[in-house]
Amino acid sequence: MQNHGHATAPDGSAVALGPVGQEIVFENDQVRVWEISLAPGQRQPWHHHRNPYLVIALAEADNRIDALAGGQPRLVHESVGGVVYREPGEIHMLTNHGDTPYRCRLVELKYLGENAEAG
Image (cartoon, rainbow, N blue to C red; front, side, top):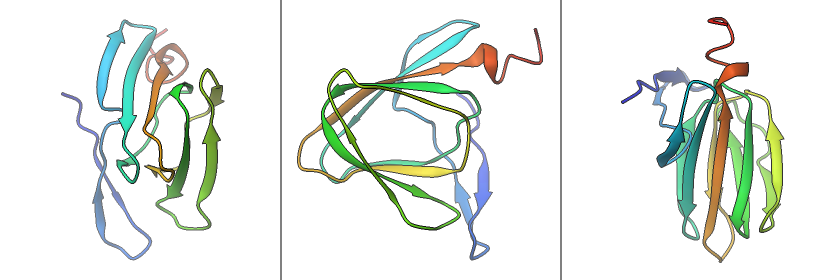
């Protein structure tokens, strides 16, 4: 199992970081594919993406993204079949902010992130 590490919150407290998803459903040296399923109100813990990634929504939901550094949360509506590309960035937490179950596949592009230096 990967060590996901720790971060320091703005108030100085230590925060344990979790994985970017709940279950790895496919992995090779180029990509890693995670399954994420969140019931209404459920959260994916604080985490940090080391790789650029795609999010492919399999079930529609209204989600909230909170940054560990603070600031206004981002509210995002994810539609079935919608695809979003994101660069690695801030430590954040994802919460299903709506009243429908959310499900997605998150595809990490390892060859552009953690394995880029090895190439």
